Length: 490
Image (cartoon, rainbow, N blue to C red; front, side, top):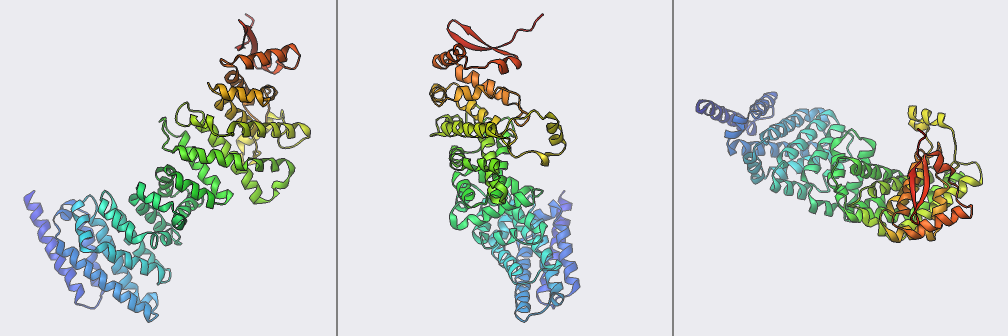
């Protein structure tokens, strides 16, 4: 092992001397080969462990000289062909620095102390803002951003310095550049640097554009895994950032945010989704504030794309609230969210009345062939498929073991409304099952609700035929009404 290290040390000294010569000579293709040799050597852990600081110090000087040369060429309006070699040399310097940081806290700290973060970021800003796009520029940008990413991994001091020098002046432009690889590498740098304090900095209105750009990339380039990780692992954990992003977004952009929240809620078996209570409260309030937009789908006024997107946002908000209140734990405080239950019942009444008044998008149907077609082609699905069922699902969840909400449903005449939906409806798959769950939750340890159902039966106001068709019966036992499966004939 000692012989290997000695050989590596000797090789390091030879390469350092070769790099030093680049400083005193006119740039030539041979210099590029020298840097490539250094890059290749740094792929080996043994070499990275023994390369001395003098080699990096010399490389810093080479990079600084290249930066001066490129800026001078830009000032005299030289074309890219005339500085192609300098761009290649800069890219290779970044490649060597990138390799030197891999699993090497020693080299990360050394490069930071030498000032390579500052020099590199200044050069990257120049390459992006001054030189026109071209393969040579993109290659240098890619390597430089990769270097920053590797430098930041596992090193808090480097993360903080990179953030201080690149946010938002470099990171935001790099996320907007017309080069997918550069965008991906910049996303990696952002993800690596972020922590709770930096996310709160992003949440400030003057800095919100960077977060909005990340969310736009989640929507337009979902194959960029880094942006999805940024959103789910960092953004969704900040109530302030979610609220400010949502307020600044178009309805179409909000759908992407809600899709990510929904995926976060349904992914994994952990009770804690990582989404804070403040986000849940904000989404509940947003649903209450905008829920009327969905009614435009019945009147045809949603032909305007923005109006349609607002209606789809309401539908997505409802889905998220249903998912949140399906878990008896983290988000059950929503049962006490002011007027959420009232809003949901009133919206169900409106949708149900509209659907019965004429043939429209909210009307019940028995077209089960359409369900098969929608499974084959999801794009053919009506935007309000299952909307009424999910309203009932949310009511059921909000009433689970909650006597005040059980009573509120009765007071708002929600029991006959829900009972009237215990019917199979191809436009609302599983609506009968959600209705039965809601009835169970409404009757659970609530004598007044049970008495109301009994009085409806005596007056002939309650139609249990739908329940019977679904295999359930209402049974009175010791003055209590219970939903029981219908006994099958033997």
